[in-house]
Image 1: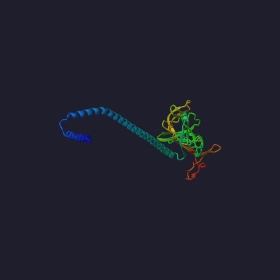
Image 2: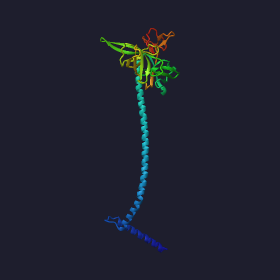
Image 3: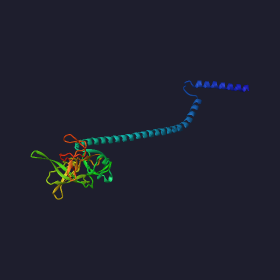
Image 4: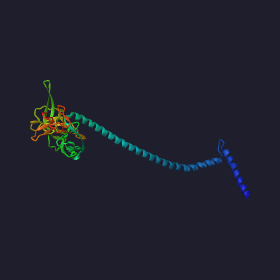
Amino acid sequence: MSFFGNKRLIIVLVGLVLLISVVGFTSRERESLTWPEMFFKDTFSVVQGVFYRPAQAISGFFQEVEDAYSVYEENKALKASLDQYARLTAELHDLKAENDRLREDLKAAESLKLYQLRFAEVVARNPDTWNNVITIDKGLKQGIKKDMAVVTAKGMIGRIQSVANFSSTVELLTSYERRNHISADIQTQQVVNGVTTYRNVSGVVEEYDPQERLLIMRKIPWGQKIEAKQQVVTSGLGGVIPRNLPIGYVVRVEPDDYGLTQTAYIQPSADFTQLNEVMVVERNFTISPNGEVIPTNPEGQQNSAGTVIPSGTVQQGTPANGGGQ
């Protein structure tokens, strides 16, 4: 038993000596390898090549999948950022446009300081009646009344057709079904013998030409010299719409069918395609039971003596400043 045990020990010792000898021999720098080393290296290289290529292909596949997923996530995040940027850009553009419109409204309010203005927003515009009516967010509770004039910063767009408690319907000047005509003046300027004279030539805005997108002003006296680009404003002669509200500019003038009066085609001052914020002009007069127009001051407005006159108070001895339809 001890013999076999000693034999195993001797074999292990001999093996260790041989291993150390081989390691010591092979670790030295030599010009060439022994044939056992070359055999084992070649065999190992072949086996390694057999397993390395598939393993490398599989590893590359999973790496490409991971890279593709990373690119997908990055692309998704970039798209979300781009969408947010586009949304913020649109909001900024909308705010700038609204700011510009409000600035124009304030300038218009300065030019109309003789009247009390009520600012409103357009809340509805039906595509079926796009050129006829709009709905605003002010009504009886905010002091809006039927037939009040409605303007934008650029000019008049129509009148209040009907009023509810918190909203109103505005009949546009471009309405095909408009029944109420607007009394208007063409502001002319003529030079006679070196002297410049200014005159208002009266007429009535009756229709709208949807093909040319022009207002039609009729009943202009024959013989009055009307030229293109002359401004058209409300005359205030009808007793409803205040005077001097801009309507548009003359494009051309033609004689009527009978040659007794003239017809002018008017380019509206207001942009009817972009109606967002509007102003309702409160009438500064009352109508007595016998039809007499009695001027009043809007609430908070001063008379010639500087006294504040409450809304609806009759101010005697002041010439009518408004009128309108």
